[in-house]
Structure formats: structure tokens, C-alpha cells
Image 1 (spheres, rainbow, N blue to C red):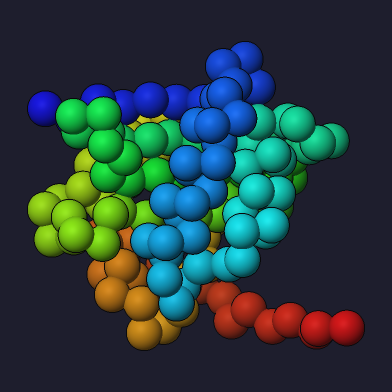
Image 2 (image 1 turned 60 degrees about the vertical axis):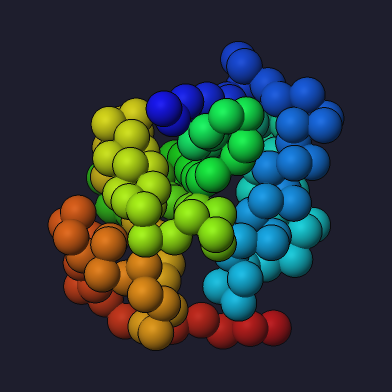
Amino acid sequence: MYLLETFDEKNLPTPQQKKAIVDFLYENLEQYGDAKPQIEKAIAYALKEITSFGGFVLLLKKDEQLKGAVVINKTGMGGYIPENILVYIATHKNSRGEGLGKKLMEKVILHTQGDIALHVEANNPAKKLYEKYGFTNPYLEMRLKK
């Protein structure tokens, strides 16, 4: 049986829990992830540990083991940009194909208020999951890196 745990500005993780979440995302996002400082910053934003609009962190556990994690940041820009951005979603690399990504997406969609945006690389196999839940790609994103 799977257990869901949510952290936000009112329910903060302990420093040990936060480190475990960062480590889990870093290890299981693999080539689609970021360095630990960036993951920590996204989590700090979601928990309003830094000046932000907040968000939440959702964990999926089985027998006390972390099997999945999601980080959602609120954008504060509802109406012209989606109110939420799904920054990270990962399932344990040894548990892929068990429907855990589907469970996480369903809970995230229920838990968020407003629209959700995410960035996904074209070759990421998770792209099919996102499309299944109605995510579309109406725009071409362009970035100027300085």
C-alpha cells in the first residue's frame, strides 16, 4: 500500500527529510535533472523558505521507502501563464513501469488549484504520460542564456 505525504509552508519537512528528497530527485531524475543546489532551491521556493508564491512537495512512499516525488511551484501569474509549474517529478528508477508516475500525476492534478505547466525534453519517455493527462505543447519555448 502506498502512502502520500505532502509538504508545504505549513507542514515543513525536517532537514533530514529535505535532504532525502533532494537526494532522491537528484539520483532518479538522471539525465533529465539538475544539480542538487537547483533542486534545493526549487524545494525552498515551494516551501516558502525563500521569498516566493509557494507550492508543495508531494511524496509517494511504500514501506517507508521513497518511491516518487513531485515539486510544484506556484507562479503567481494566473490568467496569462499557468498558476503552477511542475518543476520535478520522478519515480524510483527500480520501480518504473509500475504506474507510479500515473499515481503521482493524478494526485498532483487533484491537489493543485489552477493550470499546470511543465518542461519536458522531446526525447523523455515521460512525455507520453503528460500527454495522456491532457498536457499539450502549444508553444515553442525559446531562451536567451546570458
